[in-house]
Image 1 (cartoon, rainbow over the protein chains, first blue to last red):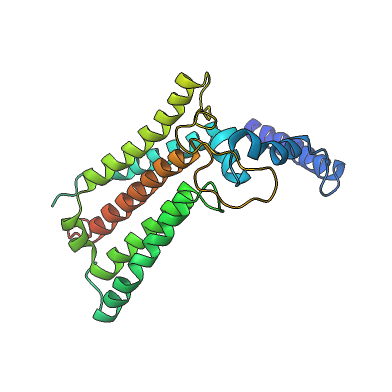
Image 2: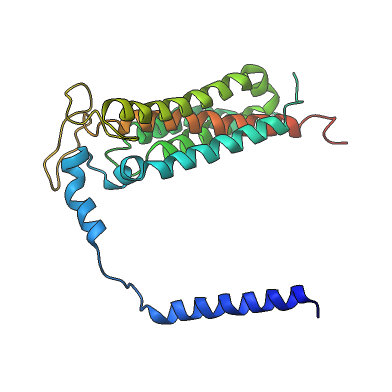
Length: 89
Length: 158
């Protein structure tokens, strides 16, 4: 058994122990602290004037996340058009 | 791929306007109802893809320039980042919702609670939804057009 396999086995077992401990520590639905939810629900209409709180989170409160999504789409389109760039009429 | 039968073409002719209207409605009402730029753009782009399936990729590829679709996709991305940078200029930080209380456009503040849907609300969110919708429609349609046309070429089939 090589050193690489031993290291991989140790890493995998440590990771498995962490996952099992995490699954055992929390009960379903915990934690129940909802400060962020309450803030968004109560302040969305007053701060941004939007009736849809989900769109407000996606485009306003978490705008950088949406910027990353748009960048991923742009990269996908650029990659496909670059791969098929030899297609001519 | 070649075009399909006359039944399929007629049915796609009938249903294409409804799909496009629904997709554009989801984009335009992104700040009022579930959905937004990504979802409505995907709906409208799948309506365009239905035309490829019905009429054949060669006919569509001759009608539409892919470079123009790519330009629209870049235009959508630039509009999205441009609105975010306008927030940096007028409001002080990136992605600031600078249109809400200025009285220019989309500036009405609804009452807290269950209120009616007023279209003229939400600040920069309709602009961002529109930019992302244009981007998603053009991007997905360009991908499908290019791949469908390339799959029908002889030199790719070996």
